[in-house]
Length: 292
Image (cartoon, rainbow, N blue to C red; front, side, top):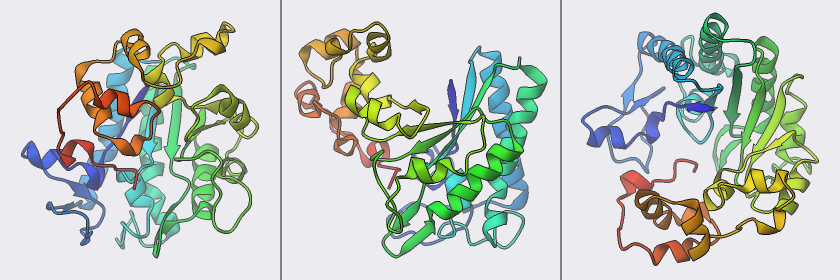
């Protein structure tokens, strides 16, 4: 699987490379100290087509599927957010128009998939269930539930991927977790996948009460054989934290060790051990947490 992403305002690295950082609306974000470029309608359409081009590259490269990254404050989420998107055109102005970028990107991706791939090519959509930061509310689960319903109704998505920091988290106005709430919006046969602090087999089993698939990104960095060990009945042999043995067996590259050792917000077990393996201090342009 290949994840397709436009980082939007979080693409600080583009400035260092001589490029520009593109956003739906040029707003004075207090935490951003680099220039932003508000996209024109034509430029937005160009990006929509770029997602199609990226999909074709993924197909040509032999990937089994693509995931459209609409979470973590990247461009797709920025267009859906009423905080980041204050446009009054086809791409913004009300909830329905704020959905248009995600819809048109999905339409372009599926156009390419239907033209160039067999029926078993996988397409998923990743979304943050809410964007609520104090008084700054981009959208709530009520709106994201409508978006995933629209996407899974209009297109044959194989799954919807919920991006959270805690798979058990609940919104302010409900006792149900996000998987239970957004799951009501996802039209079958699309599956529901969730990420968020699922580091142990017990948590995997618990999460599977509400979803079809669990995402194991960080646990897989610790133990790349985690899925194989579960499948073959070797759950007791899974490495659950970074240590001398797990790092040796996982063949972590020096660059990845440096990155993980500089990103405490990943909250990965054994980060302190990784810090003993490097003295490199990375700049915020590399380590910035785009999920907040």
